[in-house]
Length: 315
Image (cartoon, rainbow, N blue to C red):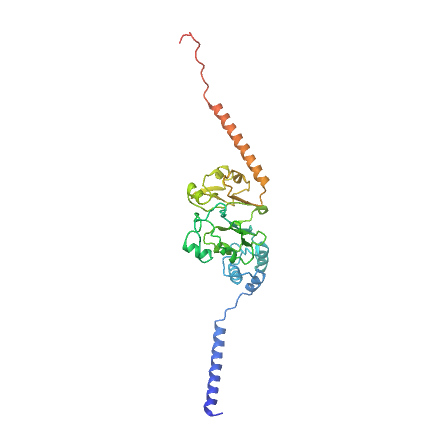
């Protein structure tokens, strides 16, 4: 081995040792110790990294929870209350239970009711199609039917129904991770409270056009007629931009609005037909009682009529 090679090896070794020493001291000086609770919190999370909590993944959620020090805001929808109890145990704080949510489809415009007006021959992707045009039917608010939501679901909780062209949510698999909601360019998929006994009532239409135009593009579009709002005793339904909107926090699941809707696009989940029929009967009986009451009040407040004087009597 000649001197040049030897000096080269010694020089490179010296540079390597010097760099290693510098890196060691720099790492020690700027070392950040991670709170050990972050790893413990992450270990009790589902590990799906779905982003349903609003953060990039489970590690980010664990960091945020430990930093916050409580569970007032942050919640893991996939793990639900059981997982959050374990998180609370790790942090030594009180668990905050929240009502579970589920994805719902706010569109009833199946092939039967929403006729095609053109043929889409582009990329089979909802996001791309939505950038190009309003859809292959007259309704610019309805489902495009290309299944982006299904592709984004990591829990196999959705599928496209070939008979309707609409996505179907599988209740027992949906974790409310929000992936399908983000994937839909038409915003027809929303998270909704599962409800008492898993019962839900919501309006499956987002068409904001006026009644005639809406019904022309979809036979069961909401016309904003307000019959459902008038039938609701709990002020849970409002009309906004030609649409009936149900507030799940106020809704008592009485189902009277379902019976009164002329196109039946107020959708129910796990509500029996018998309950809907009974709700209709109760509503009609109540309206009849109210009508009779108004008639009685009208008669009671009407001024007494004065009989005319007899014929030939002095005036």
